[in-house]
Length: 355
Image (cartoon, rainbow, N blue to C red; front, side):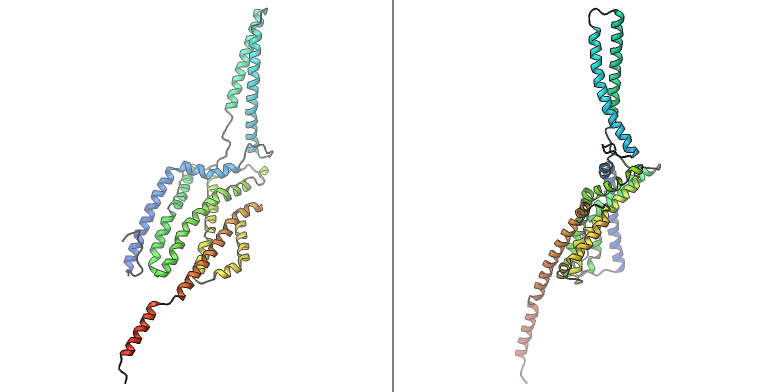
């Protein structure tokens, strides 16, 4: 029994056969997850670097903003010290040239010439030391999350690779879940469920991408720079990755609005016309959800998170109307088989002898 092809609706399986099918599909899911995990763990440096980007952008330590955060003040001191070392090295190089030129002037005593040459060498050494100090100033000013335990770097890397593997294997996992429950659907229900199941991973991945590029950086920027004058802000790696995964997962779930709308309209719970009529309440609910999902007080971030939800809602209502019209047209079409059966009964009645 293939783990790719779903069981047909007309097939009849015993309980043991159903359990055997479930076992096969679980084994296939585990195998795909293990392969995805191996790839993600192999590329764990790239994964950690990618997920750390919003944090590095948010923690602008060493910038020119005059905050009282000790870590930011320390990096600001390093930056300005590097600039001072560069300027001092250039000035000392000029003094070295002047002293060397003065030492070659005629009429100087041997003692004065020796003093000038010694001063030039000292100035040259000081310039070299300043250039070395300027070169030693850290150029990578992006801050990374910290780990507090001996095993935490390994465990955190392992966990992040697992999250990424689930995301990578999600389409196959959803297909296996759909294929297992598909025999319970009639052919008509199958035509309804298949597009919805295909939409789920696409919309989820779109929501994760939207959250990573827009929502997560703004949320982290606000939270990490909120009242930072009063704290030494050190971010624990496990907490940061947990927050990122939860936020991206929530936004991915919010992008399932079209699936929910199409499901309730196809099941007859509510019509597309009723949804359109109560559009204001839906938009208000989406605004509340966007405000909760993006914990920042500025309206720009909330509107950025809310805009795709409203667009997805409007598109789902439009699709629901199209499906309703097609279903109504299909129900109003005459049934050829029924008419053919009526004509057959009429013919039989005509052939019967009249008593």
